[in-house]
Amino acid sequence: MTGSQIAMLVAMAVYLFCMIGIGIKLSEKNETVGDFYLAGRKLGPLVTAMSAEASDMSSWLLMGLPGLAYLCGLADVGWTAIGLAVGTYLNWLLVAKRLRRYTEATGSITLPEFFSNRFGDKKNVLTFIAAAIIIIFFVPYTASGFAACGKLFHSLFGVDYHAAMIISAIIIMFYTSMGGFLAASTTDFLQSIIMTAALIIVLIFGVTQAGGFGAVMENARSLPGYLSFTSSYNAADGTATPYTFITIISTCAWGLGYFGMPHILLRFMAIEDDSKISLSRRVASIWVILSMSAAVLIGIVGLGMSKVGVIETLTGTNSETIIVKISQLLSTFGIPAAIVAGIVLSGILASTMSTSDSQLLAASSSVSNDILVKFLHLNISQAKQLVVSRISLILIAVLGIILAWNPDSSVFEIVSFAWAGFGASFGPVVLLGLFWKRANKNGAIAGMIAGGVMIFVWKFLVRPMGGALNIYELLPAFLIAIVVNVIVSLATAAPSKEITDTFERVKAM
Image (cartoon, rainbow, N blue to C red; front, side, top):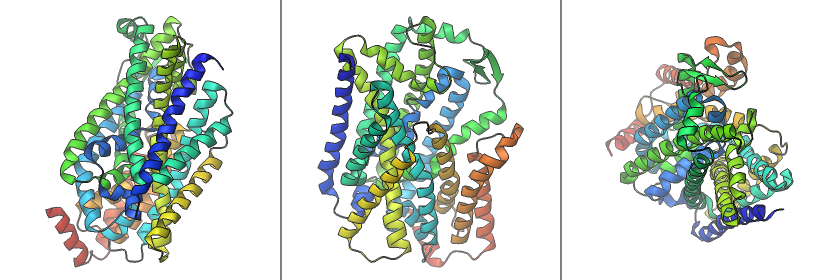
């Protein structure tokens, strides 16, 4: 191992030890299950905003987005980023405050528990279905994060993939099981800062190595369709492919996923003061726009660097390693530069870990609180619930390690599919539950199941037909789930007076 590699490894090790230290330090603050899963509803506005967005973006921000921009230009990444930016803002604007108030009014500490409390589901059938959906989609989603960490260390230092993946998983599992939601949110806040630093460093260094911003843009303009929002650059044959209106709508539909993301909605539920949500909304929206813009620019700059020969030309999924390649180049400029490169690579780790810890927490709460306590009605003390919660988290992490064992497993296809699954299953139920008094339990159950099933149907049966049907499965599944929810709610008995009175009370807050 070279001196530069050692310097990068030391910087990354310091980062990982800091995450462990935070988990140990905050473990003493978890006295109840509410503390473990919602940090006692005491998150500050900045931590709420930045931890929500860090847990949202995952390694897609520092790997997937720059890689796609590198290969195809602006259209695909541009419309995706626009959809995500709009979805982020609307989620904070429409959902955050009312969900915070509603979950406190109903005493709900998890999203599945809120569904049952909101619709008067005494048998907690909604809780069970929602918890099952969370486990189905989050366990492989978490596994994809473990796999990304293993691949990163293997590609950089030649470390055995399985060893690197297991160690990364253990670190994430340790600080999350020790510190709970507060540790996950605090580390996510710090990780968002590291991710921001990584984007800035890579962008500035990349521009200088590519010969300046003018040279970067000149190269981009020379490629057919590369800077267009209505066509996409085809690197295989150097031509432009039309980007149709249907494709634009399909791509923008990514933004719908926010309304159903458990790990993001939990941040809304945990903020200490709902009057501060407007500040969190502004911070989160600005960070999302700036960070995604920087990530897209890095892809364009990276292509300019390949043009002048300072880094190799990347093809296919290798384009997702563009920031890794730039960091490796940076590390060749001496030990101080290698340490900075280590910080950049820690940003990639941070983007992955900030999502995995939140997913682990949401999945473990589904097992311990929602299924064992709420659905199966196990009568256990708060202290024992904390132990069960931590054991559940560890077992889910072990299952994630098993699923991530294959180093050739796809990371970003899983992310896309799970995002659609949560968006279609939970998004319509959240929106209708918060804003439509007539919504009832039967409609919520039918809509949730319809959304989840349609994700599979559209993905594997309808979308392969191509043509106008070749759209992201989230959009049709989301619309069908809303329609089913409304029809079934209207066709069955109206909610009880107790349920509607709570709705009106929260609405008037």
